[in-house]
Every structure is written in C-alpha cells, then in structure tokens.
Image (cartoon, rainbow over all chains, first blue to last red; front, top):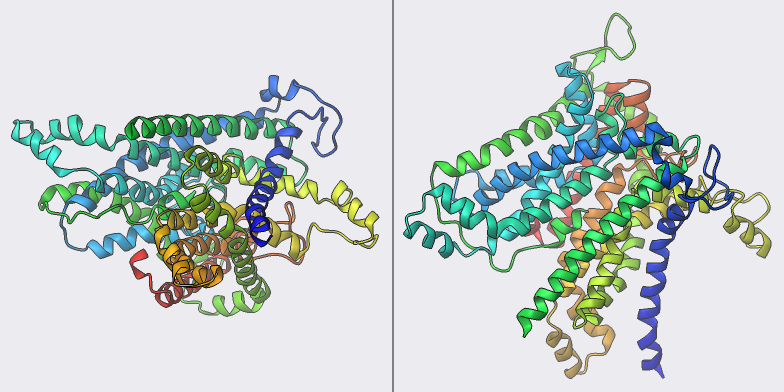
Length: 264
Length: 304
C-alpha cells in the first residue's frame, strides 16, 4: 500500500508544480487576446487585433526593436571575447590564472543592482551620456562570464590530437583554428550565444540604471506596470515565448535523434 | 539562466593546459580588459561615490569627492528595515524554493533517467518561464491576486479571508513572487548534480539494510550537494538585490521595500548617489562575506 501511494505521489507533485509554473505564462498568453481598451486588466472579450496590429502601441514596438538591437550586439561582442578567454583558459598555461578565474567568477556572484549602480556611477564620473551605447556596454559586461563558462566546457571536450594532426599536415595556425577548432567548438559557441542573447533580452535591473531615456522591452513593461500593461506587450512576450520554445524543441529533438543513431 | 553555466559544473575530465606563449595573452587581454574597465572599476566608482559629499553649490544630483564615511551611518540608520528585509526575504525564499525544487530535480534526473523524451520535455517545462519576460510573469501574478480577483473573492467566500483582507502588498505576496521566479534557478543545478548520481550507490545502501530515508540522507543528498550549493547561491544572490517583485507596481506594498528598491529610488529618482552607492557597497560586502563563509562551510571551494 505504502509503495503504490509512493509511486503516484512524486509524479502528481511534479505535475502540479509544472501547472503552477505555467499559470502566469498562460495568463500572459490569454490576455494577449483580450479586447482591451486602455488597461489590460479585465477580460472584455476575445480578439486577434492585438496580434495583428502590435505596433498600434508604437512604444512597445520601439522598445522591442531596441531590445533586439542591444541583445544582438552585446551577444556578438561577448561571444567573441568570451570564446577567446575560454580557449586560453583550457589550453594555455599562464600566470595569474587564479586572479583571472576570480575576475570571471565575480560578475556571476554580484547582484545586478550592484553592477548596474556601479556602472552608472562610473558613467557619471566619466561624463558619458546614457543611451543605447551604455546599455550595450553593460550587457556585454554581464553576459561575458556566462559565455566563458559555457564555451569552456566545450573546449575541454576537444581532443588536442585533432589540432596536432592539422599541424602535422602543414596547416598554419589560422587554418587549424578555422578548419578544425572552430567547427568543433561551434555547438558550444552557439549555446553560449543563445544564453547571452536570452540574458540580455530579458535583463531589466542593469538596463534601468544605464539606459537613460532609451526603453528596452522589459523596461517598458516596468514603467507601464504603474498604469497597466497594454495587451500589445503581452503579444510580444507570448511571441518571444513561442519562438524560444520552438528553438529549444528543435534542438532537443535533433539531439535525441542523434543519440538514437549513436546508440544503434 | 545562470544555471546553464554554473549548473553544468566540471566538464568530464579537465585536461591540463600544456601550451605556453604569447597567444594566451592576446586571447585573454581583450576580454579581461573589458571586465576590468566595465565590471571592476565600476565597483571602485561605487566606493568612491559612496564617500562623496554634496556639492557646495547645493545643486541636486551634484556631488564632489570626499571621505564622508557618515554616508554609511546615514544609509544604515535610514534603511535598516529594508536591509534586514532583503536578507530575510532572500533566506526564506531560498529555503522554500529548495524544498519545492528538490523533488522536481530528483524526478527528472532519477525517475526519468532512461526516458530521454520525457526528460527533455520536463527540462523544457522547467526553463519555459525564462522565455517569457520576468516582468510580465510577475505582473500576471499581480493580476491573479489583485483585490477584486477571482482568487481573493473565492477566499473571501469560503471564509478563509475576512472582507478586508488582501494579498498584494504583503510580505507573503513578495516572497511568493520571489520563490516563483527562482524555482528554475534552483531546480537545474540540482538536476545536473543528481543526473550524474550513480544509482548503484543508492542500491548498495538498500542492500546494506538502510531504509529509504537513511539512504537519501547518507548517499543521495550528500552527492547532490554541489548542485544544492549552486542552486542556493543562484537564488539567494539575485533575490537579495531584486526590486521588481517587491515594487509597489508589482507584488509589493509600502512595507515590503528591499535594498534594491531603496537603491533604485535614491539613485534614479532623487539622485542621492552617495546613499545609493553606500547601500550597494554594503550589499556587495555582505554577499561576499556570506558566500565565502557558506562555500567554505559546505566544503566546495572548487566551485570558485
């Protein structure tokens, strides 16, 4: 008796928790179809209008575009810099290794409000005006360590013998990198870039301290919360959600097919 | 989404670095220089700003370099409740999130171990909340628990709630929101530790007549400790500085403000940079002290 109860207890608990996790997602999604007038609080009926005319609320669209520009730029810079560091950490011997590791670990262990306020204080001291540039600088900074950790794991699985073979066949160091190292690292680099993009896209706190008058999507939502978030914001949130879930599912299905092939 | 990075833990077998030479320098310098300029020196800017004094011109938002240590006394004196609340909320939310997340991580890593499709699906469900803006999710909870909402009205109808009871703006609402937001951060690192748990060890425990509880306490839990530590850090640190959930526009009220809310208000609204900076420095110092004690006590210094 005890066993049959135990057998169902855990799966039931897991199912209920997942249901709980899904509630606000479902809510946001549902209210993206609300036929709202100004504030999107009370259910007034179903409509596709918000989806068909997202840019009806110009600020939402602008904020979304800014978020994409920031995330793409910051992801590119931090992925390049982070990959270089990851390769150096795994492959090379150098002095000050522990200091380097500490410098890379610290941003992961610092509350965002501290990084945000610190950077803002520095921009004030330097007299740099806040705007898109400062947001990109900030996002590159806080995503960099995540890229390093993610790519490092991939570099560590690389067999150095492959690169040696390349050198034995008279490839120059650049050829070895682009023909051997880079393609093998690519899955790790892509994973790191996706992580950096997601972190940047969803960041609010560091952005709020360093964006001045520029709105990103999360910042728009935060400001709008005081008077009610327009349904168009729910549309963008839901849209991003669908795209992201689709990407994750494709990646997972592909990797499980690969695993099955390997198993055969 | 920090878990992906920290939760991954050590790669299969770390190879010892062999190469030497200048290339390492070229690879490292740009990134480290960047972090130096935009992470490290800002921390010094923060300390510098925290000691500034108002400019003699009396203009709002103008300060000059000084050694005004009184700013710290003022900050602590003025905002002690918020400081205590931040760490109290962070501690409570971390413990609750751990209790909720551990069984989920265990189920995915152990019970679904040989079912790759189910495992993949469950992992996707854990990270699903990340794909929708944290602010939208928190705002959704605000609507769900708002004063005239179905939830609150039902609680009143059943008689659990008095006619003037409310949820939004209470400590409960803030802790609830924090727990919700950080369950995935807690679940994934624990999952990745349990995923590598050798089940033969658990079996051995049973063979030696340990009951399931003893086996869990002596074998499963200790082996999942690295994940528990990453998970608690990934939850505790961001929560201690969070100010979205506790904001009055989201789940908080007049008496739920945390350090982050005060830093935001002082820095961005009334432009009292020294007080905001002093509070940030105190928060950072507290985190560094707490984390190093915690990590040392739990004996996983290699995490750093």
